[in-house]
Structures are given as C-alpha cells and as structure tokens.
Length: 291
Ligand SMILES: O=C(O)C1=N[C@H](C(=O)O)C[C@H](O)C1
Image 1 (tube, rainbow, N blue to C red):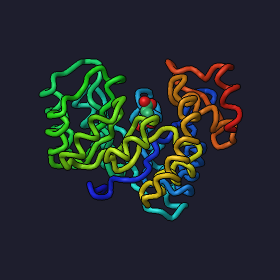
Image 2: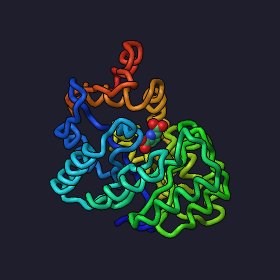
Image 3: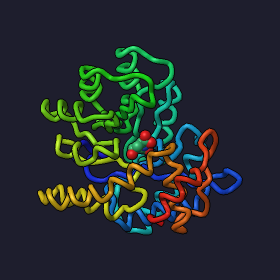
C-alpha cells in the first residue's frame, strides 16, 4: 500500500478506452498502461476523471485494474496503482474503496463529494468514513467540477486524518499548495496541468496530470530536471509542453487525449461515453502536429 513518503513524482490518470460500441477495450487500456510504465511514470491512476469515472461501472473497474496489473507485471516495475473511488454518496464511496482494496490497489483517489453541496463538516465526516476502510486515501480537491470549495482548515483537518496520505490539488492557482507547504502538510500533487511548474516551485511533491497520457517522456523529463535542481531545463521543457496542455483542455477532457492516442495507434478508438463527445474538426486540425 502507498505510504505518505512515497507519494511524489509523475502520476498519470490513464484514459479508459472504449470500442466503437462503447464497451471497455481492455487491450487498448493495457497498451496505454504498458507505454506509461515504459516511460517511467511514478504512479498510475485508474478510473480518475480522465478515465471517465462517472461512467464506469463497478464490474468494469475489476477489468481495468486487472489490465493495469498485467501491464505493470510485464514491465517489471513496482509503480503504485491508485484507483479513483470517489462519488457524491458516502456509502457508495465506501463500497468502491473496499472493492479497490480487494482488487489490490495501493491507494484510493477520493474526490470531494460533488452536486449535493455538503457543509465543510459534512465533507470531513465523509473523508473520516472513507479513511476508516483501511486503504490509503488521497484527497482530490477540484472545486470547478464539484461545486464546493474546501476551506484551508477543512483541508488540514482531512489531511490530519489517519489513513489520508496526501492530496491532489486541482484548484486554479497555487495559493493552497503554497499555504500547505508552509505549514508542512502531507504531500500535495498538482492536478491543474497549466500550473505544474508553478506548483512544484510552491512546494508540490509531484503532479497528477491528464496531459501526461501523451508526450509522457517529456513530462517525466520536466519533473526529473526540476527534482535535480536543473530549473532552467525544467522550465524550458514545461514551456514547450504548455501549448499542448492548452489544446488538450480546449474541449472537455479526455476527448482530445483520446483522439491523439487513437491517431498514434496506441488505442483502437477515441470513443467516449455520453455525455462527452469526440473532439471537433477544428481542434483535430490543431492537434494534428502532435500525432
Ligand atoms: O483525471 C485526472 O486526474 C485529472 N483530470 C483533470 C480534469 O480533467 O479536470 C485534469 C488533471 O490533469 C487530472
């Protein structure tokens, strides 16, 4: 199981490929996972936002996790496998977290409960209950998706819970990571791709980046140079990646990423499950130079 001290580096929330009929395509998923391991990522997130978690059934989670394990074994690496288990209902999140534990996950990524707009105390109680399952929990704060924003004290309270090992911060600036680093909190990974460099400079211990599904080697190199104190090189690499990052988020994630992976022959089809739609012709033309 993943420990607080090991939560760092480049984590990639892998896409969930579907065939043209909309069924999970485990062979394509395996290919993408295998490539990510070859490119030396530090962690894989199965069923994250980029994995279209709101559309994935619990029985499909088992298929995806088995493919991730097989790719890890074939790559002969010991990279942690994190599973997204968060929903807006505490009981179903408990069940999904228990399921992830039984599958052999190293940790659960648990999003702040969305849509029902709980109070700060309600959110704390949600995390207290999930942390009691026994699988290490990574708090996932993404207010523009959930509709609720955590206060600093709420984040601190959740991070102090036994069993919570760190957080993924997808807020639109680096205030939170700066404040948490100043206070010496558990590790924070940046989940806002345009801010990856700024977040590392502000104390983040790594990134959880959807964009790193493509150009993975370059994202890994950017992080490794930063870690080695080669800040100029790291900045140079990040500035080269920024135009791509901006294109990948010009339409709902992960449609642009899936289109690129299909064009590169890594996944069979860029199919998404509704309500997400494939990328427009206009964006395809802009992405074409990255194929
Ligand atoms: O799936 C994820 O994890 C991420 N998703 C974010 C999003 O789609 O908003 C972006 C971030 O790179 C990580």
